[in-house]
Length: 95
Image 1 (cartoon, helix red, strand yellow):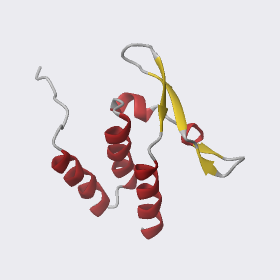
Image 2 (cartoon, rainbow, N blue to C red):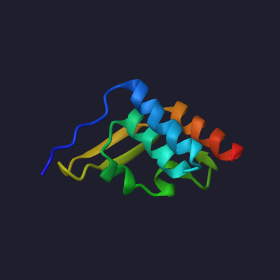
Image 3 (tube, rainbow, N blue to C red):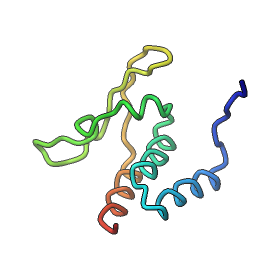
Image 4 (tube, rainbow, N blue to C red):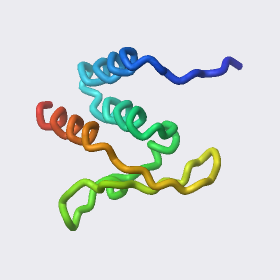
């Protein structure tokens, strides 16, 4: 079985995100952005729910998320960078 390596080149990450955006795959585009800015594994990101990142009562995005990392079972609180959030919102309104 071959080992997988993360993409470390920023240009390649941007190309991957843009590929998904051009294909209209906003979910995958947003996952690439979130993975880049939070440095979480994809398995941890996939377990997030909308309510984890968006507060319906305040009608606003949360500034932090708390996740239990699957591989080490450790709970982490991570600040959400406004850039990927704002980019994803902008792209969703355009499509």
